Structures are given as structure tokens and as C-alpha cells.
Length: 114
Image (cartoon, rainbow, N blue to C red; front, side, top):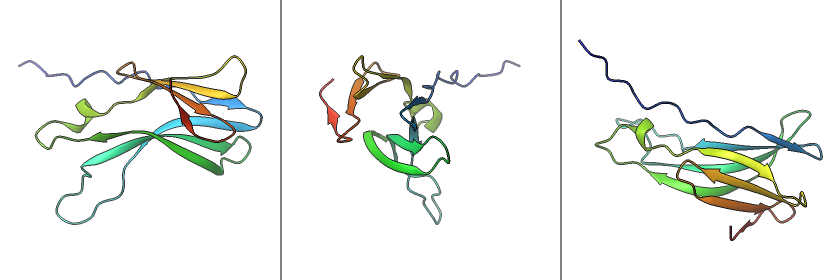
């Protein structure tokens, strides 16, 4: 009997700490209720938290993932694999598993063209 292995877990981005703020990439989905407990989409966010107590300061959405019901969810999830500060330390750069790049202005919390 052969065992079918699920996909290897992606290497997820390590948090970045700068000026007392911890930046992390997360996948988040609205809770669902009733007969279908799985949401049909989730979203990737960059979240800024106080580095001392973990209190969330703000979050910015990077992208949505719409799930196909006939395919395993874990095969459809797309994680942020890299986070790093820009040379000037005024922007946070992110890249997902598909190689898409995102740039977030740390002052305005707005996504910029990568």
C-alpha cells in the first residue's frame, strides 16, 4: 500500500521587528456556521503588532484566495514566503509562493506598486 503525501508545507515568512513593531503575514478567513464549516475564501494580511505585548496595531490585505470546492484546501492556500524591510526601512517588502511581490509603506500602511 502506498501513501499519498500531501504537499510539503511552504516555508513561511519569518516576522520582521522594526522600531518596536512586529510585522507578520497571516492567512485569515471569516468564521462560518451551519452545514458548510469551511469558508469559500481567505485573505492574506500583513499585520503590525506591538513587539512588547502583541497588541495588534493595524493590518493591510495583500490578496484573497478563492477556494475551489472540489480540491483540497491545503493545496490551494498561498502563503507569504518572504518579508523584509527596504533599504531605507520605510517599506516592508513581501513575496508569496507564486512569486508575486508586494510593497507596503510603513507610514501610510498602503500597498504600493511592487
